[in-house]
Length: 356
Image 1 (cartoon, helix red, strand yellow):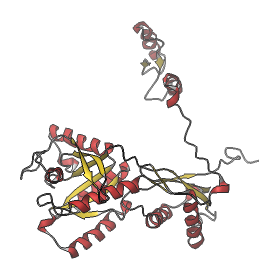
Image 2 (tube, helix red, strand yellow; image 1 turned 180 degrees about the vertical axis):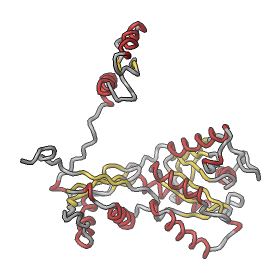
Image 3 (cartoon, rainbow, N blue to C red; image 1 turned 30 degrees about the vertical axis):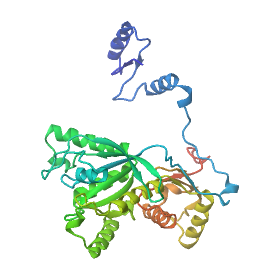
Image 4 (cartoon, rainbow, N blue to C red; image 1 turned 60 degrees about the horizontal axis):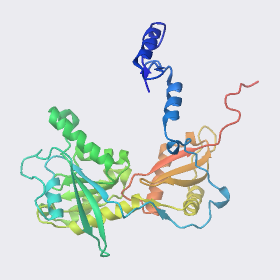
């Protein structure tokens, strides 16, 4: 598609007609600054796309007669594909050392200096699970992520961008912390990024051989839930890349949280739970108007995404949404994964009409 931009006004006509001489077909006059011609652009893109890629806006239809039916929970898990795992964290957290220990060989460069890893490196291997089966995994070693204001070197900027791409490509993201100085502000920023990207999360406490205190571990898990409520209940696993301590529990936590990330909850179970919750704690009234939640369903997994149907949902307080999310997290064991909620309301037939 040939676009002739800046085509607003009479002066844009000259350049628009000159674009015909390029021989690329009829140009589309648009103005990115003023938003002109975008409708014709969308129509042209749609006409050029293969038919199998075309779809209408996602409309989720639910048979209201079956919202309480007993159904089996489902999953979108495909064990034939390699599980993509990105290991991220601050510089010198021990990411490469840990991956070398998992692989059983010195595949990645390591050293006492921070910033040795520059590129995201992918490594394919197989894990033997507790049930004796083998699972293919693809591990991504990434460069350490520092505070954005401290990154001035161009090479480090490229390395950080490469690490962020690995997070978006992964299914499970391991945020590796230094157990001697855990939960720095940068660690919380990285976890928040992972949650916004919708990835399953595992927090690894590396260098645990220097701490090795069960009371301290319980305190750190409680602190993680307090500081990171958006992924409450995420696995916090002590591990040591130097000695190999805790590797089996570390791998089991990754497999478990990946299964949770792929889980689908039946509509019947969701609505029986929702009915009991609303009966006990109904949504607050806003400006004298009652907010009515009729039912909900899970639109998709990876991460779990739920749709609530009802009236006046645009006035539903954020605090009540968090209340519902925390309730689903506890009831349906959705710990360690971000949860999305979308609200759908029937169209008002009188909207836009003037009062007499």
